[in-house]
Amino acid sequence: MFMGYVLLIGIILTLVLTNYIVFKFSRQNKNRRIWSGVVLILITPIVFFVTMGILSPFDPGGFGTGLYSVLNTFLFFVNGITIIIIGLFTKSRI
Image 1 (cartoon, helix red, strand yellow):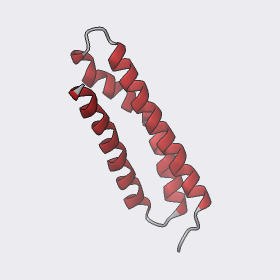
Image 2 (tube, rainbow, N blue to C red; image 1 turned 180 degrees about the vertical axis):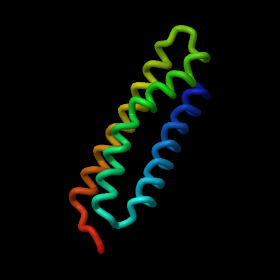
Image 3 (tube, rainbow, N blue to C red; image 1 turned 180 degrees about the horizontal axis):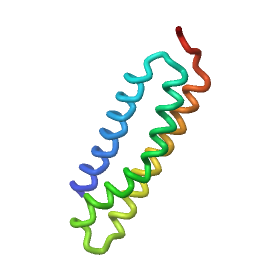
Image 4 (cartoon, rainbow, N blue to C red; image 1 turned 30 degrees about the vertical axis):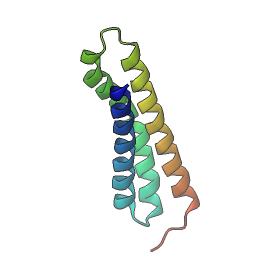
């Protein structure tokens, strides 16, 4: 049970850190924000395989590792889509 909470906190911290980096990089620029969302979508397979590689030694069956990796990858993908939508509907300050 404790390990589940640690993994959940890990997902949340990773997403918060990713959002902080994306919004710090893009600032008020609309194009940068859209491209940051696209890059975030493009690195989701890397996130999947890195998560699988890190967690697979701890799960002999592999079901929990796969479930956690798919959940983490899905949240990264949705986060990228959300950043693209925010970039499309915000006004760019020059």
